[in-house]
Length: 185
Image (tube, rainbow, N blue to C red; front, side, top):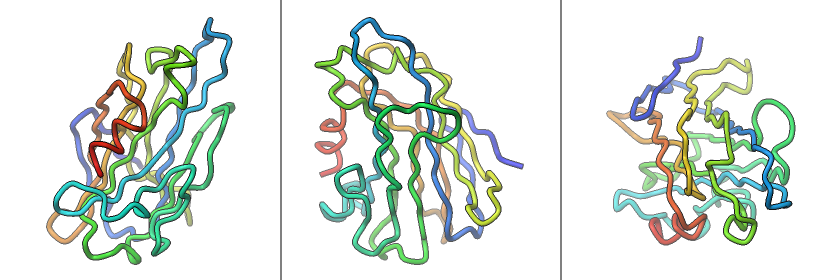
């Protein structure tokens, strides 16, 4: 049975070495006449809080880290349907020694020109599950009412006492993906 987290909560992922981080959302009808394209990304950070290298920023234009330890399964351009809209596979056994944290974010592509923000997004969640059994380990329903934000840090995986934990973040920002690139580069 999954551990359901609230904002700021954390949970151990146990001894699981290979897992999938699934992220999902629904969008409201918008009067901008534009479809929504939300994008999940992962920043593999060192002890300085900065990305290890440009190749360790995994997103729709760089689907896999050099070691193959973090892999984006592809860009869902519409977010249609139930369940996970985008997923990132993680294999901790391949993780480089200098990686201390994996930050997971979702941004709205071309949000400013499309006049879109997370106030028009509902039912956002992030979950971690074992792909061999489909057992859900951890889930965080954001449940937050963002208004002007175009980017949200859903959560982070981090090293703690020789193991790995997941922390539910749920922090929104204006500035889209570039905001995170600037923060973690």
